[in-house]
Image (cartoon, rainbow, N blue to C red):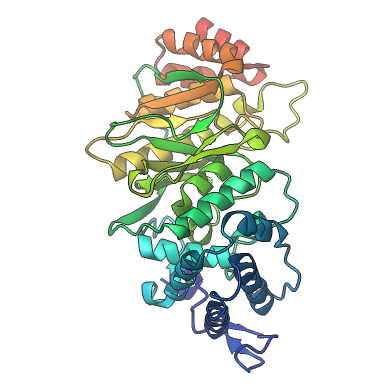
Length: 446
């Protein structure tokens, strides 16, 4: 693997910075020397200064020294720490210790990018903890192809955030993690599974199937006490996956299962024909609501956290399509094939990771919020992929989508096979369907 196929961590000996504050007394210093000097200097003041000044001041020093940003907005972080952790010496020490462990837990000072040639990476909990500490402290630079800006948690630190309730929950989870660190001996596996190019649908004689569930409000995680293995959850990911400062499902899950956050370094974008699957990851927090109503409801006790596998699949962004005078964009061009391959990549990857007993796959209205997908068509495509790949997908929709759920149920109860639905979905008649109802009618007349 060449150097261009790896992300350089801040402890890499070939990484340099200007060191404008002279922490190392050099105009061009090694990045790691600057980081270490800044952390050691901050640690010396833990006993005589509050955390609401020690940690933000350290972040400001690092962000300026490494990235040249002399005025980061840290007002929200200062206020949060003052309210919740004003005198937490142990929390500071845990963050600093994890950050300083980076060259020890990553002796190559790099992370390989996931690709079709190198589809897997396994990280220890100590390695993930070290990365999380550097995301907290703002030392990391974006990898090539990243679409989310900084791969750090700086977006959570602003004094004014459009979704303050969600950001409060993200910060609560992050600092609780470092206040009560958990370091099991097992590893976390990440697998970038590419779908087969061959047509899997035309010859599949399995009837389409899908479990349907209705809820009043979105919430995570689901109540599956005792289910083994625990469910896998489809994350309605962006093409460039990651966390953020609003309240989308992707952002909530990256915060509630913090071990997802390093993904932004070694998988900055998901290929068009692939899905990213994880092994079991502890869930730290429970959430209710979506976007502006998203709110943290509880933190799980350190030794009683449930586990989930995750499947990151980016749906087509159809909200920008002009389909006036034509049919649903979900059924246009090669969109049906693309979405089927995406979901199938996730199903195949999960079965590869769990060959003995594939978990139930939980899914919300994938690609049907801001991305503008039609929930009926997406539900039928999920049913096709579920049947073709011999997995069980449970689609959970809000009660106000009751009509859509009834239409999906009509399509499933018709007993059509994957091949039969595929023929209809690829037909010229499907391309002029104006909504999910007309598509189900077309299937019924098939």
